[in-house]
Amino acid sequence: MSRALGGSALPQAIVRPLNAETDPDVGAGAPGSSASLISNPMIQMIDEVIRLGARLRGVFATVTAAAGLSPMELTVLTAVAEARTPPTVPQIGRSLGHPRQVIQRAANALTDGGLIEPAANPHHKRAQVLRATAAGRKLKGEADARALAAADAAFPDVDASQCERLATELHALRTQIEAHLRARSS
Image 1 (cartoon, rainbow, N blue to C red):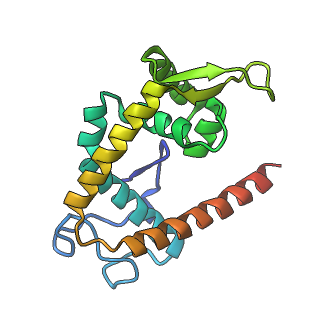
Image 2: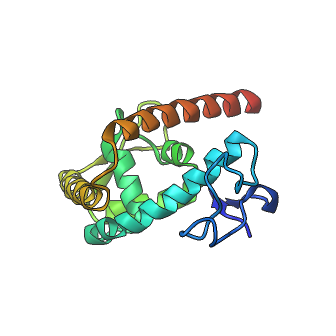
């Protein structure tokens, strides 16, 4: 059995086997425990991120559904609405690790729905930048409020400072990985 990661599958050898005896959620033991069959810390971290992502998608599925958007559409709306500078479809794709065509389909649906709009890109003739419309910003704000309420209800005992620290550390790790990948492809 393998788990999807960015559209590809992790090889059998690096995925912990399912074991209902050691994990009530039908997963193996914690990283570093004797039940873990993975000794590489990077692979352990990837496994935990995948598992966490699956749990969070379940918790926040109602937020996406209430927005009336597909998960990818809400992801693209978020990328556009929260960008420091208006992004292009290829930039969003690279940032999220999705093919440009997947992002383009979501952007087209959001444009058709009046939630984002393309604008001229001073740095590129064909790749337009995307901007959230007032309706898009409003819908994003409503989705954020629902997400906050869902998080408060589902995770009342989760330490916010731990989440902040982990987010900072994961961002730093992602930045390091992206720099390494850029250097290798040059």
